[in-house]
Image (cartoon, rainbow, N blue to C red; front, side):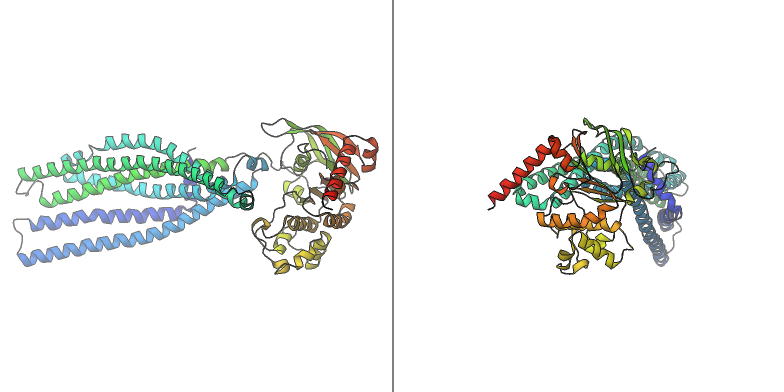
Amino acid sequence: MSVLWRVTGYLFRYRGLFFLTLVMATAMTALAVCVPQVVQSVLDEMFAENAGDGESMMNLLIEGVLIVTGLFFAREAFNCLRIRVNNVLEQKVILDLRRDLHDKLLELPVSFYDRRKSGDVASRVVEDVQNVERAILDGTEQGVVALLTIAGVTAIMFSLEPTLAALVFLPLPFLLVMSFRYAKVSRRNWRDVRETSGELNALLVEDIQGNRLIHSFALNERERRRFLETSEELRRRNLRTMFRWSIQSPLAGFISSLGVVAVVGMGAYLLKIKPDGSSGFTVGEFFAFLLYTNMFYEPVRQLVQINNLMAAGKASGDRVFEILDHPVDIRDCENPSDFPVGPIQVEFREVCFSYPERDEIIDKLDIVLPPGKVTALVGPTGAGKTTLANLLQRYYEVDSGAVLLNGIDIREIELAQLRGNMGVVSQDPFLFDASVGENLLLAREDATPEEVETCLRTACAWDFVQSLPDKIDTMIGERGVRLSMGEKQRLTIARALLRNPPVVILDEATSSVDVATEREIQRGLANLFASRTSLVIAHRLTTVRNADQIVFLKQGRIVECGTHDDLLVHDGEYADLWRRQGDLISETALSTT
């Protein structure tokens, strides 16, 4: 289905407003068409043989001027109402389209964002939606009015003088061929413009988010150069599109003017061979025909402009519907089950998984996370530890095998319940641009102040929150920029505690806090782990030495599994890593003394 036709469906949600704008636009056209008729009537009476004296001619002229003025006033009054209704309709359509797009973005799996830049996605929601709306609403309304005007004026011209009317149509084949050829090239040009604009937005968002890194590595000149290069490319593509239009538009105007010239020449000839005007072509008809000729070519030129507008709208529409049409691979099954009640046992059964265009990450992996126990995943970077946490939350689907909760495949559990019953603290903590309290209450809106305080104390975050200017009501900025990494991580731990989930996932949750704070958090988390199934991912082995079960992963496979003491006795890769980290800690301690 055509992109532009699909967007038209949004207009028909408000068909009353849409048709009201068409009615008012049609009324404007009808009033404009009446003006040449008044001019014709006045001129014919003034040039008639039995025309009255000077006073009667003046009265006739004044009457004609007043009627034309009234027609123009009524036309602009309708135009004022049309603009207001059009603005209301425009904003409703934009709101609906952006809401559907935003809903789809929230529904899409994590894998969708793995392959896209956030700035480009934002550009589609803001700029491309605006372009699509402008093309459809303005193009449809103006296009319908233009066609009605052409039809009405054509009928009147043929009734006045068929020969002249035929001359008016001579330039149309050339205009049509030129417009179709231009539209083909223009769509491609506008698509390039929109893609480059998305790249520029992505670069801008990246520079804003990485502002501190840019300053710390003195990358200002590099980023300035990248931004300038992309901006220059956008400028070139915009100019290429505009230059084509700068040829198309004047050329269309010139071809149209040839029709006007033909009408003037033939009209003057008809006046000359019928000078009395009594039964042939009159002076009034000649002037009226000239006005109608201009009224005919004005909507024709407008259709040429709409053609360019539609080309830009289609280019943006392709980008918008690329998101709206993107398949959602992870959905609830029919008749999904509720989240299991009671202690939760997590089982990864013969799980295989790989990311697109990458070798297999997880290979026939079997792990059981006993209820109420802490299972730690350790191993080198890229072993698949965080991937397992993502599979447990069903951010990705396993290629084969299954992830089970109390024997129930997580694909059979309602997605909202599955994720809503897990408390997650990631190695990259995310906080919204809101107050500390508002960020915490995202976990549970009905939490009491006492519960919030308890969770903050457990996460060793209470003291630093109390030191903030407005305490728990302090605004922390975008992504918590006004807090240190350790403070942000402690707040996300408190938020996870507040949810009180049966399953806890900690992915390097204490990687950005000092050793003393880490010990305090570990003591606070002990109570949390006691009655919950916990999955802890860590690189620092000191943070998981008390885990009930430690799984050493390497290249997506289990190399060793056991308690800390058992693995040291086994003297395998875990023990080797433990010794190497111990030596590193000792060397660090010596270097600081």
